[in-house]
Amino acid sequence: MLKGHFVFGWKIIAYLFLAGVGGGAYAVGAAFHLIDPEAELVTRLGVVLGAPLVFFGCLLLLFDLGRPQVVFRAFSRPNQAWISRGTFILTIFIVIGAIQFGFWIWPFRGLTDYPVFFTFLNIVGGIFGILTVLYTGFLFDTTRSIPFWSTPILPLLFLVSGVSTGIFSIILMLLFLGYADSPALGILRKLDAFILILEGMVIFLYLHGMHEVTAARASVTRVVKGDLSVSFWAGVVLVGLVIPFMIEVFLGNDMVPLTVASLCGLVGGIYVRYVVVSGAVKAPLNSEGVFIYLTPRAE
Image 1 (cartoon, rainbow, N blue to C red):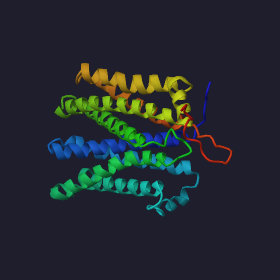
Image 2 (cartoon, rainbow, N blue to C red):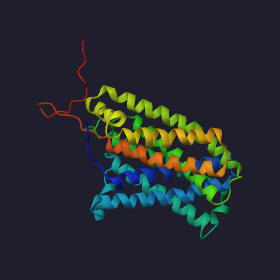
Image 3 (cartoon, one colour):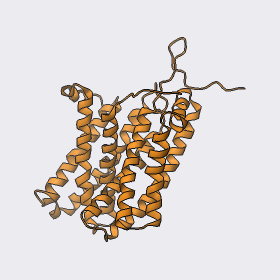
Image 4 (cartoon, rainbow, N blue to C red):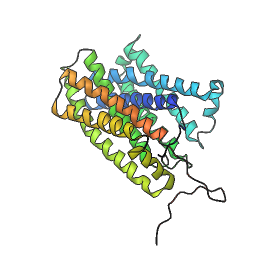
């Protein structure tokens, strides 16, 4: 049986998940503010979930470095490296989230007196929330020695998964706070059902597109029918996509089923990142030490 090894450990997987949920939740909350300013609760929950989850994920990144004291070097090459760009993106997003939390939710309420500036913060924060979800996919795309990551579809996969898990987290918070009858809940449920379909399509395109590359095809084999197949078919497809979609479409806003759907969706989000990270297989080298990307084809 074809097996691989972890290129990154659980801290990176947890970071990817937390950044996806946090950035996705904030982006959804910001979108609600623009579409329906009266749905203030959804925007608040996006702020409450966004920056804290991303900040905690960044702490995991620091611990994974082994030498967190040298983290300042990550700011040094924004024009050359996605790590530097990502560091700026994460920092700006966390700062905007902290400003909104401190001056709109607790301990101050000053932003309520400046609606234009508040809207500006929501727009900018929403953009950086999306960038927070996207940038890791672009960072992985630069890892040429691992073709399973080197694809422009990966950032899109992280984006749709991040938005979906962000919606699930907001739904859970609404249910936990006793807003099961909120009109926003129905909108979020229908929106997420659509995004789950989109996520399934992106996953299909992601795996299908890997067949042109030798090492990437080895990764797909591991994911579809190898040592990662249970995690993929049970964790990603069944728990992360099928069960939440069926509940959201056929069981409506009932509290218990919707709670189950949201929990399943979040678990599926973890498995998406686990499969992507642990499915990595390095490209082989030829006799001259150059990566071999394409499988020879018959003329």
